[in-house]
Length: 158
Image 1 (cartoon, helix red, strand yellow):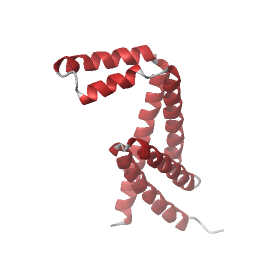
Image 2 (spheres, helix red, strand yellow; image 1 turned 30 degrees about the vertical axis):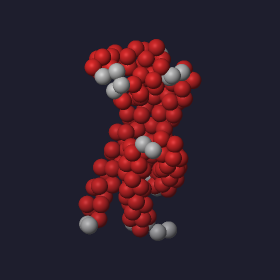
Image 3 (cartoon, rainbow, N blue to C red; image 1 turned 135 degrees about the vertical axis):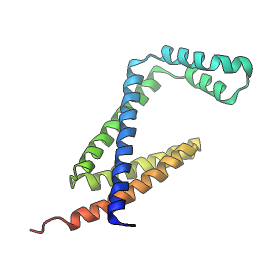
Image 4 (spheres, one colour; image 1 turned 120 degrees about the vertical axis):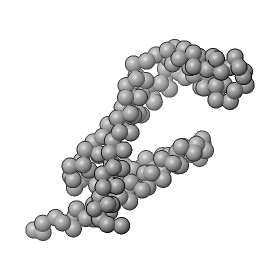
């Protein structure tokens, strides 16, 4: 594959990471601002019709159970987690898009830590989404590493 094409894929993957980071920040802020009662009422409203049709609907019953057990402490944890996670990724994305040398190794370390946490969570949840995210993160890590090698190769020697 041509280096130009790999660079384009790198840029798109970093932009996707940036978009994901913005969504995490928005989700964290929303969780911080919205009360647990509002979340519970929203889930009730969204699942009510489905539960009338099928009282044993898997998704609706699980969502309802989750919303009813969603405490203030849990809400604050997820708000902090999403917001901090998003801010860190936005800083790294900005550094990568500006070709800041520090951003490449920092991104590799941070993504490695995120992957470790995702695999830890997968061991409890067995959520396929975590595996998909981990595979995407591994591809992005390879692209970052590849791009870092190119950037370092083209640095002026002192």
